[in-house]
Image 1 (spheres, rainbow, N blue to C red):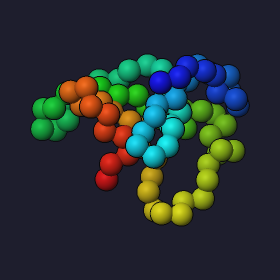
Image 2 (cartoon, rainbow, N blue to C red):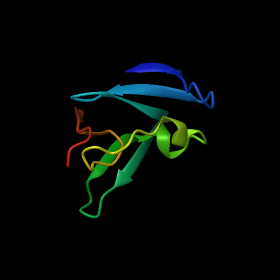
Image 3 (tube, helix red, strand yellow):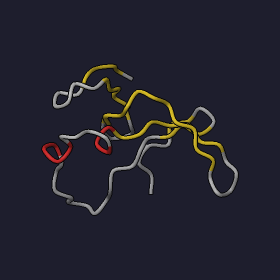
Image 4 (tube, helix red, strand yellow):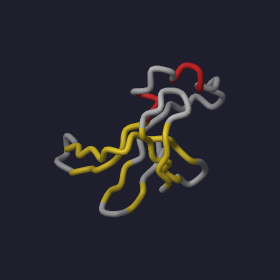
Length: 81
């Protein structure tokens, strides 16, 4: 994981390394409890909070949406569908 700043809005960000690509996220770690009671910790995609996100969006070519990267019991889950 690398720390940095968003080139558009200047907010602090971290780069998370997934299986196939890097993802820019907000540095705060969020805790979510699923409907099944599983506690999941992860980071929110910076694209969901950046006021300039539209400038950086690519056209969808494979129909997948941006999802935050989560860690479950220490294992990176990434963008699994």
